[in-house]
Picture (tube, rainbow, N blue to C red):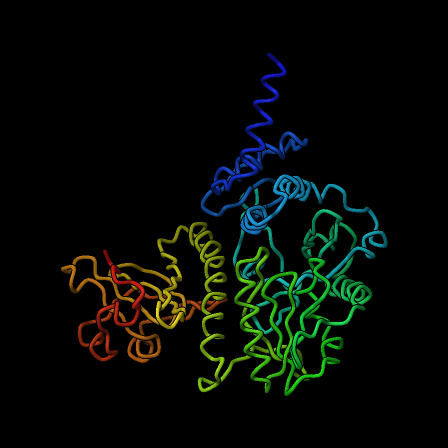
Length: 422
């Protein structure tokens, strides 16, 4: 009987690892595995935020779940995720023992934005300041590289544990990264370079600007880090290189550990945001990449902003960032919904859809492009302190204002949504 029970349990475990679980099932099984591995602290699952919460802080499950679903060996990946939960228990006691394994980590700013409070197990704030930003949308954090996982070290951790400033830790981390970056970039076509390492730190080599400056490009160096194993570099004046960069970045969007598809340009003062002119042949491709990438950022920001308003007992609603794909042009359009009678913070999008729930169906939803909306409603839209930018609104436009901004049926602006508003 005992043997049969063990076989049944192994069969169920194998079946689960072969299939694709729901987010909730993944979280609950991970929480059980962590407890079986020796965790004695209280853990709870926050389904809305898709995190595990304990006294040590929050364990965000989004990247882990994505990596698990894409892994060839899911059982091994699952064990590594469990191991990463316990990473902080094995940190060396002395900084000189930590130093050799420090590396910089380039992440989306919205992952660790300290302007928005995140609650730990006791309801307090868990994040400190981010000293390094890249082009306002990426952050550079110090990380400790375990063999099976990467642990981010926050400023308060470094100061409390080892009495070390964040700036020093990042300098040491960058020096370590340079030492393991001797391999030459791959060069799939003249003027285009792809990082060769695939060691979980390719994106982080964006901080090694002297290394990147050695690459021969047309114009300024332009880079993109679509995921942590990919760093793309080409020239601002290289149309063929930019076109191929966009193609590679689009393909990388479905891979795990997504970072950003917002390109940056290298100047004498560091990286700045890079934008193509509307007349450039790759403009639409880069615009679609931006729409999809900024959508990820707004999703993360929505989670933390919602928590902030909850802590403040505010009834302000955090509006979602939606995307619509034009089935003919394959172009992505970002839009938000401004709902009548609701105090809300809107993301900046390509199109704004106005929802009037009390109107007849044929007049319930109209839409206009962002520039027209803002030029008409600027006095009713208050920019709040956040990244990406959001606007506080409470007063809906009047019929005259809707007319002035050229609002019309939503499907005229969003052809992929023929059933919008149903």
